[in-house]
Length: 266
Image (cartoon, rainbow, N blue to C red):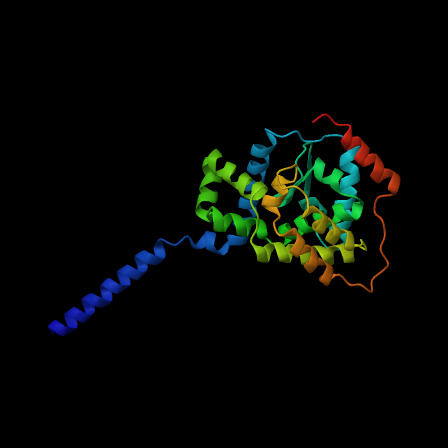
């Protein structure tokens, strides 16, 4: 009899323990995780851009934005990327850099555009950043380096220190080697599908590697390391038999873009 009572007590305890454990799980949020992630990313993107843009000089000239946006949109459309999800920002600064924030915020520095010898070089950098967005490298990096729980709490509580860390992590530190390689090789695919010659992208990476790291390229080196090796990988990936490339921006518009950027007060 005592054995039966003991076994019954154990069974009841186990049942109560399981019931209590399952009752603590937020099943609604578990089964809506994709929706929650999308909403969280949108909020995080808006907060990050608002925080970053306060101290930056964003270019508002419509003609400049229209020219660069035509390149972004052409690459996106050719690769099935929704153009509405890409939010282009051009920053008027002497620093050479490009990066992406959550929810499709694509940030290009004006000096990067000026350093590009041709539109194909710029298209390569744009494609690289689009690849980071499409391959979900942004969220992956933030989750690993800051933590999902911290990010969610920052969104709900408006923690500026965490948002500052988000911006710094994405604008001033590099992705891991695999993510950089994946973004480079995906960029080649994007360019070829858009009928844009990817060889200048490899040339750009190779040329940048020889620049002075203590110059306007300092931020670029911290966010895009190993440019020389990456250039070699990009060149190997290129389909050498493809020749039907086109120019998205005509030469006069490209030169005018660079002239307009050069004439802006920093």
